[in-house]
Amino acid sequence: MENPPQIAVLGGGIFVRTQYIPRLAEISHLFVLKAIWSRSQESANTTVELARKIFPDVECKWGEDGLDEIINDSSITGVAVVLAGQFQVEMSLRLLKAGKHVLQEKPAAASISEAETALSHYNSICASIPGQPIWAVAENYRFEPAFVECKKLMEEIGDMMSIQVIVEGSMNSSNPYFSSSWRRNFTGGFILDMGVHFIAGLRMLVGCEIASVSAITSHVDTMLPPPDNISSVFQLENGCSGVFVMVVSTRAPKIFWRVVGLKGTLQLERANKEGSHGYQVSFHGADGQCKSSFYPFSGVTEELKTFIHDISQATLKKGSSYEAETRLSFVEGARDVAVLDAMLESGIRQGALVQVKKF
Ligand SMILES: *[C@@H]1O[C@H](CO)[C@@H](O)[C@H](O)[C@H]1NC(C)=O
Ligand SMILES: *[C@@H]1O[C@H](CO)[C@@H](O)[C@H](O)[C@H]1NC(C)=O
Ligand SMILES: *[C@@H]1O[C@H](CO)[C@@H](O)[C@H](O)[C@H]1NC(C)=O
Ligand SMILES: *[C@@H]1O[C@H](CO)[C@@H](O)[C@H](O)[C@H]1NC(C)=O
Ligand SMILES: *[C@@H]1O[C@H](CO)[C@@H](O)[C@H](O)[C@H]1NC(C)=O
Image (cartoon, rainbow, N blue to C red; front, side, top):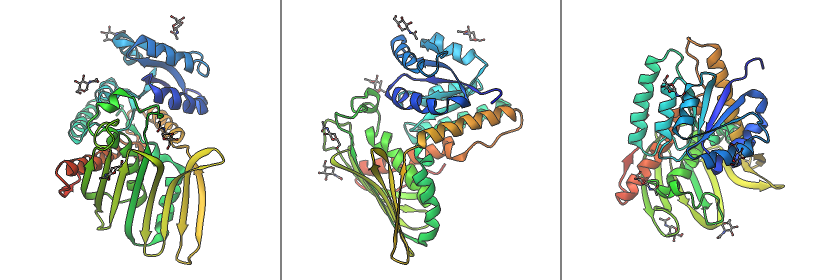
C-alpha cells in the first residue's frame, strides 16, 4: 500500500495488551501504528514495550501533553479509544472535533442520555468539519463469521416464532476483567458492559429492532457489582417475542442464541473445537436434517480491518462524504445500549413494560 494510514491507540489496559496489539499485529501491513497513549507514564511504558516487539517505531505518549501531541499530529488520521467506559465518549468527541476518525470500544455510551447528547454533538461536528470524521464503535460480534453466516441462514427458517438468548457467563475471580475498577463503578455493571455484545448478536441475527422489554433483575453474588442477573421478555417490532437471560457468573458457562421459525430452527452456541474458541452453528431444516459448522472467533481482527479500510477510503475521497461500514456506526452501538438500558429500567420498576428508545 502506498500511503498506509497512521493510527494511535489510547489506552494501556488489559484489552489493549491482550487483544488490540496481537490483532493489529495480524494486519500490520495495512497501517502504521504511530503512538500508544495512556493516562499514566507507567501504563504507557508497559504497553509500548510490549507493542515494540511488533511495531518497533511506536511512540510512547502519556498524560495531557502526550494527548495534545497526538491531537496536534496531523499525520495521525485514526485513533482507537480503548478506555474506561465512563470516559470514552468525552474522549471520542474531543478527537472527532480535531478531525480524527475514531474507533471507540463498546459500550457506545454509559447510558441512553449520554448516547443522545453524544450524537447531537457528533452531528454538529460533522456539519462544521468538511472531512466528516468517522465515529465507529468496535462491536466485534457484528463481524464474527458465525453471526455473518447465521444472518444468511435466517432466510431459510421462515417466519420467526420465538427467540431465546441465554447467557450463563463465567465472570469470576479467575477472569482478568473481574477486578477492573471502572467496570465495578459502572451503572449496570457487567450486565451493561458485557450485555451489549449479546444484544448486538441478537439484533444482527433477527434483523429487526427490539420494541419493548420487561425484566426482573437481581443481585445475588455480592462479589459482583449489581445487578448480576436479569431475566427479560422482549418483543420485536415485527411482533415476534423472545427471552433474554443473563447470569454474570456461573459454574457451568453456556451461551447461545436460538431462533425458532416456521420452517426451521437456527442455533448459535459458544464452543471450543480443537483448542480454538468460537461458535457452533446448527441449522435444523424443514427436512428434519441438522447441518452444523464451527466458526472460530475472528471478529476483532475483522472489525479493525474494516475501520482501517474505512479511514483509507475516507482519506482518498476527502471532501466528498464517504459511507463508512454501518456495522461499525455509533448509532448501532447506541441501539445495543438502548435495549439494555430499557431492561435495567424495567428491572428497577419490578418488570414494568418499557419501550426501547429509538435511534
Ligand atoms: C520504560 O521505562 C524504562 C525504565 O525507566 C525505560 O528504560 C524505557 O526506555 C521506557 N520505555 C519506553 C517505551 O518509554
Ligand atoms: C497543540 O496545538 C495547540 C493549538 O495549536 C497548542 O496550543 C498546543 O501547545 C499544542 N500542544 C502540543 C503538545 O504540541
Ligand atoms: C471461574 O470459572 C471458570 C469457568 O467456569 C472455572 O474454570 C474456574 O474454576 C472459576 N474460578 C473460580 C475462582 O471460581
Ligand atoms: C466512580 O464513579 C463516580 C461517578 O462517575 C466518580 O465520582 C468516582 O470517582 C468513581 N470512583 C472510582 C473508584 O473510580
Ligand atoms: C440469579 O442467579 C442466581 C444464582 O446465582 C439465582 O439463584 C437467581 O434465581 C437468579 N435470578 C434471576 C432473576 O435470574
